[in-house]
Length: 545
Image 1 (cartoon, rainbow, N blue to C red):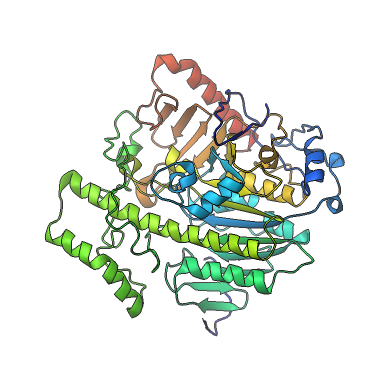
Image 2 (cartoon, rainbow, N blue to C red):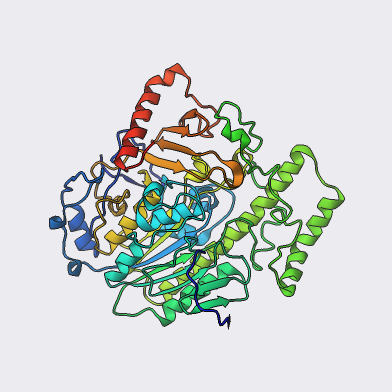
């Protein structure tokens, strides 16, 4: 490890329902509560006693909260350790526990098998920096101010790491930060500069910058394990956040994954050759198609520029023969699109496999050190991603593939193994949930609500039945227009701010979102109800449409 002499610079850089895997439940549509604050939780006895308490509604910017007088004292609960593994751009169907059929992720599947899988986990703004700010603060973008990539997170905002640190947790962060302001609330951090690189990453800590040779996913795992080994203390619970760069573009596989999926014939998405008819005009004018917008670096026809000579030799051994065959007899038309799709997807899934291996190493450490039963493990991503659906890569849209994100939670003996939670949850729920695990209250002003009661199956009054979404980054990369919308368990309404256009999808009849029924008179009442719901959510969250 080599350290530079440069000092650390400021980085700019209702009822809850649960089912088993074999079960089959459906929810009825109802109106949502715009927000909510967390409850306290701890040992199984204290947790169940808490969840049996009646919830007292209090209207504070639309929030539903538990009255402080009804909560047990922090000393009355046994606070668990928290391991949060947070990846970048991980599509839900690239976790085999979700049944996508593309790959096998045994370690992530272990979390689902031994804990809970959320079937309806969504984000409020499918973009890296805004999503991360929402996870930290429990607020939607308009309230935390990170609307676009490049915006700085206001250091005065309340975040769950700061709250947990103040409550006595040992806190650590390794990996991607991407919020420009310096990380706050951590006893230890080592973060990638900006987006970071896949190989030989440079990391920033309070003591300076360090470049470490190797593959970033493996390096971040090494750093996390080192912190557990050297800085974890027996007299305090810990919060460890491991935030991977992978599988973000440009999808550079690690040396151990370069040979995976060689010659794999992946199933083709039904919408790979989408013509974008029947929807708002923005779907046709975006710049994120596999056919036209992936470049030769994305497709590995040119080697990554960040590789050392030794790394490049392994890279060329893996890609050289297939690249030579491609150049000797390049496909054309739809066959060329299919070739690009297979090349892109193989690289993406190779990056995912390294993340799954990382999770396995972390779980092994917990097992080997007797920490499994006392540690809540959460795996999620900042947003989903397009794996050829609609002919796309990237994210940003409110369409399902980027709106959805994987969410797996394991807490042995507290969360029934093999559970599936069907309620609508969002990334704004993460902060209040982690605070409730520690027996800490959320501010009544947060937009999220602790989903801990959903995991225990004790029942939650008035859980939301719609979610709020808003995307701001236009003009910008990939030319996705600004939009705002609401989604229920069946319907999705999207308004495109500057196009003057709307979309309405019946997800039960049109799961691929190919035919907007906005103008269909059969859906007139549904449209009116969703418009009212969108306005209600915006008002409840303090947003202006």
